[in-house]
Length: 250
Ligand code: FPP
Image 1 (cartoon, rainbow, N blue to C red):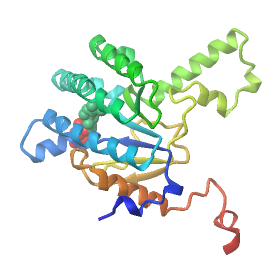
Image 2 (image 1 turned 45 degrees about the horizontal axis):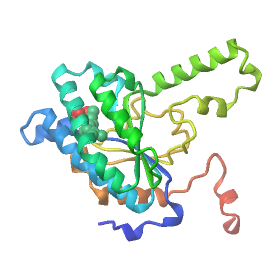
Image 3 (image 1 turned 90 degrees about the horizontal axis):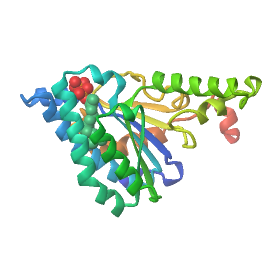
Image 4 (image 1 turned 120 degrees about the vertical axis):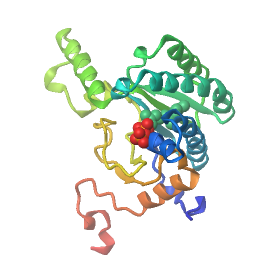
């Protein structure tokens, strides 16, 4: 089993993004309904947030509800929304105690107003915290985010505030929900699926992808350590060749 001590603090990813998948299958394995899996998913969220903060990760982004999830049965959507409200109410004090800031990405205004208000309250309350930013992707999809950014840039071009010849990668990044934050260096998906599912498509251009068969409700601190140690063993070339990165060994 991988332990925290095996992590090289000097090569820590500053931003980890996770696709929490497999709650439904986990519940089915127990002979329970899908929402039972989501409830147990909260335990995995708590464990993962605690581990990430302890190690020194600065940003942790969790895919909690996608734009596409709105097409799930109403019962499941309602259960997820009330789980979100309950968890935020219960955990805001823990976030404060641990100096963790809460943030969201996504079309959060489309959330039920009670959920939106609860979230905003927790975001405001934790806004001064500096140890780690916990980002919940809610009603989020990358194509929604990129479309929104394009519209915002187009409006500024029309108003004469942006010169189209000056649009570069930074202009795009600055109009995404993640503006000002580092891109994730490590992206984890649980449950054995090897897909990105419309998540942070622009931001993960150079991220290392890590897929584990573990179902999300079973994900624990050690699983996060394992993903980080695996990431640290990889050579990140950013389009260069190995010898350029390690001239001594050329
Ligand atoms: C994917 O499993 C999981 C989700 C769509 C929701 C994730 C939500 C939680 C972990 C609980 C609430 C979160 C917070 C941050 C309080 P799935 O339902 O797609 O599983 P399946 O692929 O096995 O059907």
